[in-house]
Image (cartoon, rainbow, N blue to C red; front, side, top):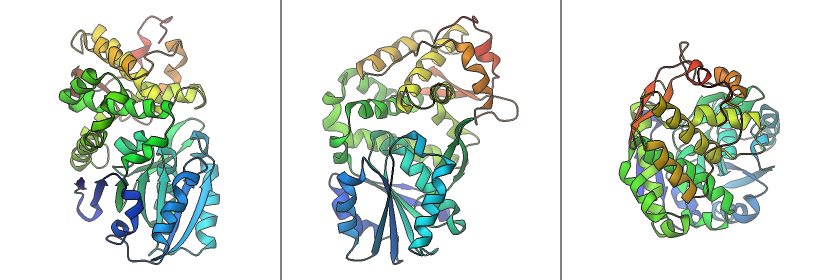
Amino acid sequence: MKLYVDLGKNSYPVYIENHILKEADKYIAKVFTGKKIMVVSDDNVYPLYGEELRAALSEQYECYSLVLPHGEATKSFQSLPAIYSALLEVRLSRSDLVIALGGGVIGDLAGFAAASYLRGIKFIQIPTSLLAQVDSSVGGKVAVDLPQGKNLIGAFFQPSLVLIDPLVLNTLPGRFINDGMGEIIKYGCIKDKDLFAALEKHGSFDDLKEELPEIICRCVDIKRAVVEADQFDRGERMLLNFGHTLAHTIEQYYHYERESHGEAVAIGMYQITKTAEEKGLTHAGEAERIRKVLDSYGLPHSCGLPLKELTGAITLDKKNLDGNLNVVLLHEIGDSYVYPASDSFFADKNKHQII
């Protein structure tokens, strides 16, 4: 399956195909004519797929690798000097290439390094987590975290190519499958009621696994359309942040050590929809549908935290724009909208509210 993200001079193809990793060189040759490639990965992914990728590339290119510690803590400013040093050591020029081989952390971090090294060097995304395959590898958002919040330093820098091999998910631990399912459920909520209904019908990852390439393709296609309409996140692209306002603050509160991103998004989607129903901004019953799907796919809908603990972090969230919080809500499943709010959207609830 092939999709094409049409952004003028920043356009690129996305290929979704079993076993594509073994043929990566054929696809990369279509978009890259330089000599040197740096593969950036982590210590979970590289032992599984790094040498296989380098073997596919080494006949045509000078291929190097940098392996970083896995986990959200790596996606920080402190990791950037090591990446820049590795690129300089092998003398990568502006005509060379960086490949991000890994999940969302590696994709965001390597992408930001590529965007800022020599004012921009080509990079390719080869996502190996379900979350990265359906969401973060497409769209060109690259970033690092600060202690004050997630993704606060970043850029819009589109990849030259995205290669998605669903078979690499066979080595993914169950929790990280659930993590990716959080984003798949999000796409059903914001844009595709039929996708959401299919998730309800299947009721488990094992049951839908046979259809996974098509589900990944559907999610990427939704994101493609949204990004083409709003590359720089000023309008419709904000819909992709459904559940994320609460999710980022939950992740930050626990120092990225408890809930994964997808788990935090799951909590955010349910809790914000429940709040919107109480305010008459979402049709009644939609939060309960979301809760049941989350339960089916092993995702949480609460974190046991007093809401008042999060309101300070919410005001720092990067989606604040012109004094508004721009909360993403649902009219109903499959129909989302941006609601200009403020932190009082949450703060005017019972101060003892537990989410």
